[in-house]
Length: 339
Image 1 (cartoon, rainbow, N blue to C red):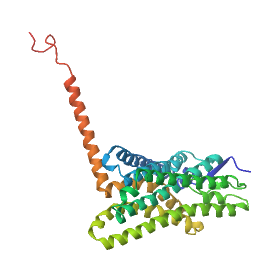
Image 2: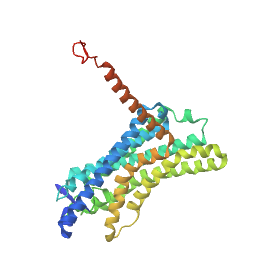
Image 3: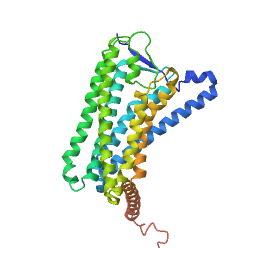
Image 4: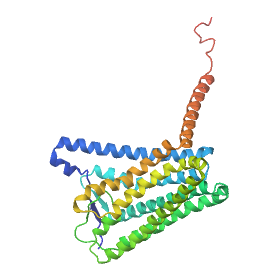
């Protein structure tokens, strides 16, 4: 029978900190809250800035930035699944979540994570067509094709996560209902099950997740093998185009690298802190770094930001001048020098 609530371990539990003194506990708790609040604020504002720029700036109305806008929207959703709950738990001495809430968190976490994997592969395919087939690029990456790539990314992530969440929800849980992790995640929830079906569900879940993750990673890898071959063969012209791939390569390395370490490397009993750090890296820190990476390493995005800032300053100055011009002149009867 499923428990009504599950308890989750937390590195920043106030109960643990009280053992080393109240003052140190309070400082650590405040630091924890401020850091994660700042991370979430930067994540939401940075990715929202990218979405707004892609939407408003006509120079960014291209397939590459259309996919980048959807990636930024996914990052907002991805971090919102876990980070607000982690912050909420920091104010509570008992870290609990309902069973339905835990399954819901797993579903959306896997949905947005799987969709991001597929979208990163779609962005690599876009760069492959732009560099290896520049003459046919406008026809191959049409508006319809862009919408199809985004739809496939969302549908594949949603379908895979729905099956995994359904299989997990059917497992019986008994005994200890403690999940020794910062948030509800599939491997840690399967460990809490006492059913012999847990191994079968674990195999099915890993097969689905592996198909999405490894499939998108292999597509990305094959795309960049062809891109690097084209850059080495064609020379300087394509080397300039390859500069647009560096931001994407950095994001792919962070996302797939941290996820691979968490899910593929065997963890010992003493590596719980490292598992939490790596989970925070790909679930919280990577969505925050994506807009920073793209804005710092992409001249078009930096140009769009400067243009938006100049437009905002110009509108503010124009509005201020308009208010001053619309102010009625003093009446002759009320003027200081009237006679």
